[in-house]
Image (tube, rainbow, N blue to C red; front, side, top):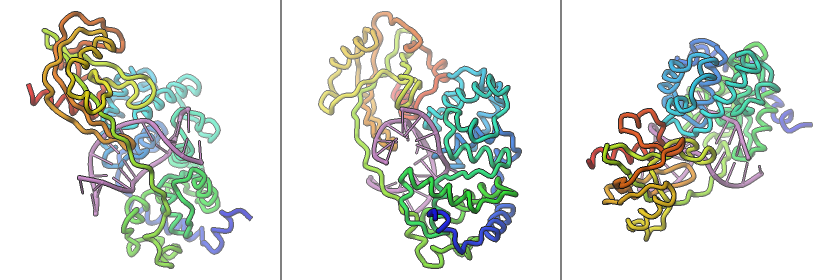
Length: 364
DNA sequence: TATGCGTGGAC
DNA sequence: TGTCCAAGCAT
């Protein structure tokens, strides 16, 4: 017998569905992506919500949908504008993958988001969770949508002690959900689980006394709700020292560089910078030579006017920021541009470089 | 399978 | 202040 079948023995799935869905009908938050079930809007919201809080997403969702109201609008948009709309939201490959996938839907599926797990999960950026979320919410298909909430809620409900940080564990929860999901209302079932995880069955100090499915919960019964789920820690991040320079010419245009199309902050724009060891951080002469080599620009480096720390999830940047002047001419191309500070507002910058810009403005 | 990939909020 | 995240996916 499969582990999932073993786990749900004695679990009253029908009653649970009813209790969960009734609670969701009463208590669900009013959210912009819940106003209709437009598959495109459901899709956009699900991508934005990956590893990102609801409160953070709301303004981005409004702005994004107003700029790109339909599949066609997004498919035909400039990537630069899409990234600008994503600026500050993080995990920028989500934006580029979304546009790639939307183009695919526009061209291959006539602008209709596919409604089978096979087709939809082939789309760039659409993994197992998003597949289930779109299918259940937009199309009413009873497919599991297992995210962190669902694993937390069900690890407590069924007292499951598998490590939810392990990729393999997600499959166990998918098996479980397939056995207990509501076929009548998979949309509210899946959304109800996530809403419950967000509002009641929280990572720390869950509100068990307010929980609509407390009677189904083995962890509450056993008093171990604070010990579940089991989740191993990630390893600590590393520190990288950078020197960055805000380089201006005699017309007060500033030099910006487009980052590589893969990896960290892919395709976003930045001020010229280099990794340094802590010692070299004060060496203006070497920074000047580096800029000449890497960007082909003849410059003089002035004073360091700020140090900026930026903490990523897996990395910390400590950036020493200099001002500098461009002496000769610069060969511009699609990855290197001289722009006015007004034009700069059209380009998507990572938050770290937005902070460099702020520091420069207050220094000037 | 483990790691890289952002950001801002909660405690 | 440091730690842990929050509706994951690609490689």
